[in-house]
Image (tube, rainbow, N blue to C red; front, side, top):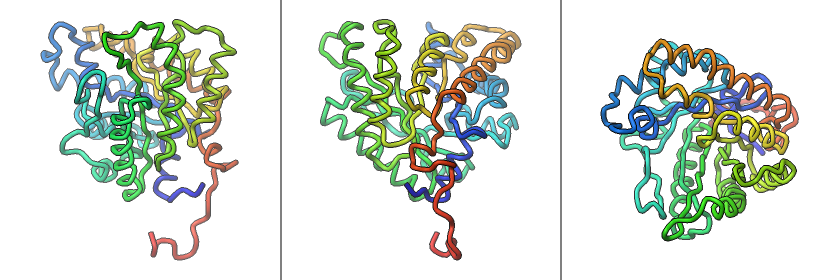
Length: 330
């Protein structure tokens, strides 16, 4: 696989020195507001959100290969505050928080006033897009794939990497039991990987292909992750999806052994800090707990994982050489 020079540079920037993606996700918006004040999320102010994200970024960024931030509360703010080290990659999200449509037919919407061109112009390393996705809902899935394809085309034009995060959800009328959805999840996650990595994106941010509350057999879990690896045509990383740290740590180990190139970890690293009201005490938690958790996960990925460029057909991270005069056609 040949990579254009901008995408190649962006992927290098969001990876660590050993070409693994060890990324902290701090782009939460509506969910974070609800977690900070369950009774009255609207009472969480703009500055409350900014302070939380900047404090967390200050603690974990030095140990991450990159940080994922949103444009509303985090990305420009972290740069302006000087707390995102220059050698750490920056991913910026594209989607509006939440979704439109029914709970059983979720449509991702883009953040108004935001664009791939702006992500590139602000100096970010990569673009991230979350899509709610059920491959068995043909019409809705087609609309979501069209959105991904449109953003992918813009990323090709701007020559910046695109990471796509598909999230499955129950759609059955009247709800579905957790056990039944757990039975469905492996097939949904694996087929989703197959469909989305057929598009011109660069990295898949995948769910773990099982619910570990209902499946604890590590041999079976490894087999499912290996199926996910075969289904994905591109490098893939694991998202934490709100799992507690102990669970996510085991998922990262299994996924890495199956071929994952890293993780984008959010609440698994820092969710307990949301309930700490004192900013000083919360910062202590970020430094004493969230940052060491990230380092622990990064060490595991470096021990067991597959470099991002391996999936792209490169053994050492070198791609087609830039020929004389390449800039004239760029």
